[in-house]
Length: 383
DNA sequence: CACCCGTGGCA
DNA sequence: TTGCCAAGGGT
Image (tube, rainbow, N blue to C red; front, side, top):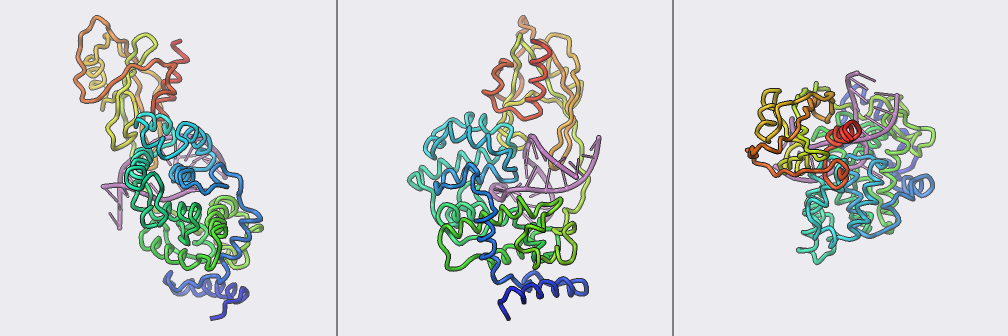
């Protein structure tokens, strides 16, 4: 097989042509022979070089950024990353911090299992690895919250390891450039993409080249090869790209199979005592695990009963309902306001930790985003 | 292996 | 308004 650029361009075109007649297994997809060389050159010239977690080989800083960036966009992460680093400058500081402090700094970022795993990971690094991150992809992937792709990102950025990432950006780039069919979330398709991505890794390169390659995969997908309107005119692979050549940018990668998301409804109790509100700690797993939230009930009657159990006075008044949309369901929230009756000696019959929080100390508690909005609204209307 | 797990931005 | 999904991992 020829390895020249012109021949790979024609092979890509022929792949798409024959793909209309017969399905081609991903293992037979030809790789651009100089994919990595061209990607590295493009990254150096047109990629991103000034993100807060770049220009360092400190595995702690790289690891922290990679965990925060899981399923989360750069612009969202930036302020959280700065606050986190200021409070926890190294692994040791994070490892010995109270879990509540970690959750507070994470509140609003979502996917709270990441925060608990981050904390556990720091402790494992300190207790089992002498405070230094292991350098191999395998050892990194054994740590809590670090999977195959994140391990490769850390190993390549911090240690120059030849290991490929496979995130949403890479899946989109590979699906388009090489015409990979099928939904990338499906296991079979994803496995093929891992093989393809590994076959594309640069050979005989420096640590800096490896970093530029990994960063290039992310930058290409995040800045040019975006889902909506890819900027093919600026893409170094435009002449070879199966999607571009065949005009199928909109169809690749294949979309997630549609499924209607269910709607759930919950009643939340804002039990007030002066300018303080009672919060309840959520269980460590499930939605909003480990965060402080409002006590919930399954319906109006249960909410009224709950308020009574907590020692509220008779009046329970409705506030404006709000809707919060998750990835896999929609949550309609019915807030109910009640005042604590201080003469009541009602006992908390619930099996959860509670706390009274002043509305002006919201920042000190890890509170879910919609609950935070609710409490901020309450602060505005009552004080 | 399919499903669970947040949030904000954008078309 | 609604749908879609972004530097994925755990179970």
